[in-house]
Length: 216
Image (tube, rainbow, N blue to C red; front, side, top):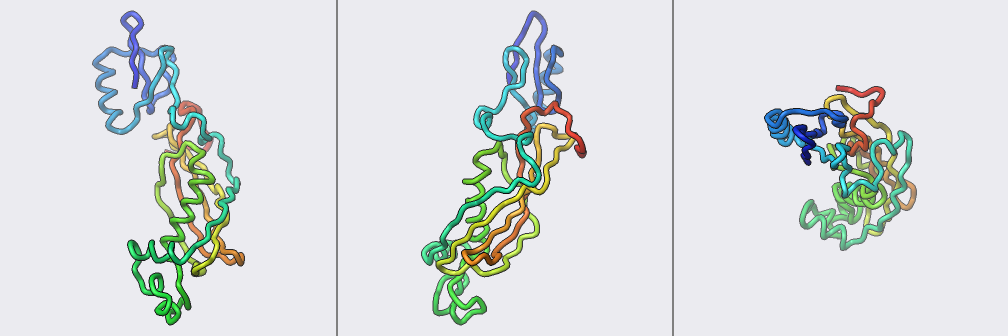
């Protein structure tokens, strides 16, 4: 948040409002607005000319306006080793078929297999490297329709793609967009091992720009 004064006029900008464009308010109004909006995370910085300033961390990354429904993001691949499986399982998912090869051979899986949560975590890491670290992401909002389709066994290599399947903004929070990402993860044989739908929050470069189809 930044304030500057020109004569008796104090200009300001809030995420929840359009750029100031010469608007003014008295100091008590500003203080009230600042306190209310700061609590909700709406505060936006402005420069000395009253223009909205971009986030310095993400200003050179892709924003909501740069994304297109149907875009396919290749994830690359990751080889899942015995050490990776047992290390993860020891801490997070200590079932015998993730920890002990003899026990795993007698299980439904037929061998040492990765935890499904490890498969999801490895897939997310590949998405961060390939995509999320290159956009103005503000974090995940949750996932839907998670399915583990084929066990990931010791020595398997997993990879795949993520597709942008939806983009939306809301009237109430125009500074943020939501990108829906659909995972299609396979092993080295081309067998599907996991699918998932992730919703991620992303910055809008120009919150004042109208967007067709915006919801409340």
